[in-house]
Length: 147
Image 1 (spheres, rainbow, N blue to C red):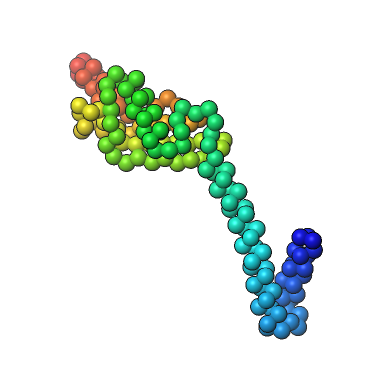
Image 2 (cartoon, one colour):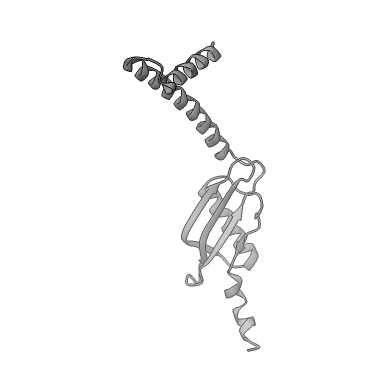
């Protein structure tokens, strides 16, 4: 029955496009029905794409929310440098869907040195170990000493 309705709608649309003698009233009705059908199909496709995009990636180091990602990156930075960090600026969580998972970026700095801001990145799949630029500050004295 659904296929028959679609065939009828396509036929009406083709008649409308070819300019066969249809009344304006029938043309408007056919256009409205075709538009409704396209919206229903397009809406279903968009909903399916949104569901895939927002799906949780299983077996990740953090959940797909800011609180979990924030806690994870702060723990990672503390383990890496042995000092406590805090989020000091922009932060962004983007979910790339079921297969790629979420990626979190933020501006972080040590609690005792808030001027030493670095951008940190972690993801649920590829970059589970934090990537950051804090080494510039961490190794600054060692790098400048020989000079």
